[in-house]
Length: 275
Image (tube, rainbow, N blue to C red):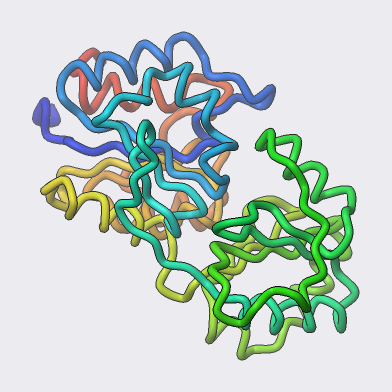
């Protein structure tokens, strides 16, 4: 029997984890999260999306109080959800954007980025920038990147394209790109570039330190490559049944899939003592 109340911070990925394929949260999952919160557990969403892309879920899950937090941009920006006070920020610069934009042109792949002040910016709109905008309910800014100053704060840069085009670009990325940045493929059509120090594990660690929570008191849920770091970091890293094999390999526990209330079942088992 796992010790009850052991976990004080629970970080949950969204797509493929918290959300079902139709992008909804099941009733069982909502109940489990609310019960965990009632026991004093901090439950947070940890996502590659900007906070505007998760606001409706924060509302649905009652995560908009003074004591609620969100890890956005894969941990690059950790915020209080209500006031949007920044707990931690690790960004890129306009110089990084110019460097990656040049590479994207050489590789023939589309690109967009998230500016701290201007939101989603792209030199030209394309299918997957529109997917990003729709997913997150945000506007697309068409922007001449040459006008972006080198010291401009950029949260993340993304190469976005048809899966086969993106994979070809990945296969041809210069080795130095991996040395300079955290590079994660979050979907078959999204490749994300973040500050080298950024990953969801770092984001969880920074929030835990802010809250005074120990590593062994942390539980994380994920399914994809960009969840690996936080699954490895947590005292209890939980992989979904639908997770990538490399995520399952580092997890402490494998729960059911996102279609089968996997998040709820693990919270019930390890936090609520119901199973």
